[in-house]
Image 1 (cartoon, helix red, strand yellow):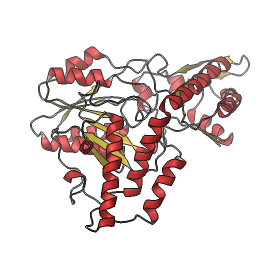
Image 2: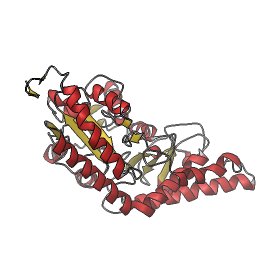
Image 3: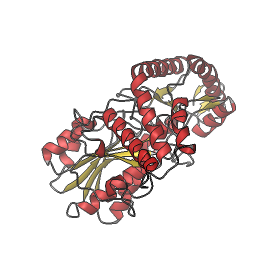
Image 4: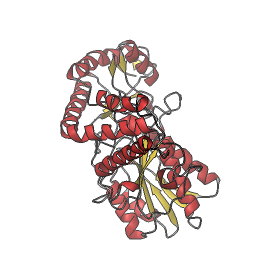
Length: 394
């Protein structure tokens, strides 16, 4: 099997698994208990918090909150700031956010909040002038993702946060860094010091599913989301998931140890895959190809074919890829991201996302480049938009 769907989830790193194992067996104690061996668990949680705080440039480890996933983190931000700031009822976000942000915004909209939805251009980039114009004195929160999960397009979060704070220091800024965490630099005491909240999820960087995090800048007004316990400084009740917290911290350490090597390899392989597809297959384009993208993500629009057929045939060839977000891939509706980018109808349904990881190899990319052009050619022969006699679009 060739796995190129790492924006959906990643393999657990062996080093992460090994770090977690003792906490399933020998060190299984509740960190809230008073006896010494349990208090050691609490110390390990704080050590993990320190590792993650260092990675993102947080001023204090207490600014890192452990959650179950980025979806919970996103919900915590919107719910928490709405409760803490009842007099502000305007939210700004984009039309290309993950559903974990989009659906929360729609829910708040139904509750009487006003939401401004920022559009993107054909390359998937925001219009900064439009962004500046929609900021208001009563704006509660700006939520703009760091990198898009479908196209890999990177948004200038540091600049956007700075503009918001210059407009009104009381405007809060959140970024969903689920896809960018460990792949793009994040320094919350440096260029990203205008960002108040950062969401992330461990299973996107070689940690098991079920553990995530949320950065909350100290002093930022935000109410608890899960109530019922003193854990996480009273901001998130519930007994801590010690093995997974330990594992996520180890994944951050691994990312720091091999970052330059991993990024260089993923970029080289992503570019090799992109060049090979463009050379071998006519009538394709790269969604977001003109914008800054994450080093591991390639979204290819194949005109005149259906994405569902592409994925089935890739699967038969032992290749795992995606047509978009894993959270919406069961839907037959076209991607909301590609719709917002105004990708042509003949390509929107035939768009495929390949996403790489540190474990992706040259040989795997060579195999995809061998099999993918044949798959597209075969599917085009079945397409009503394709002329079999001339082997060209009708």
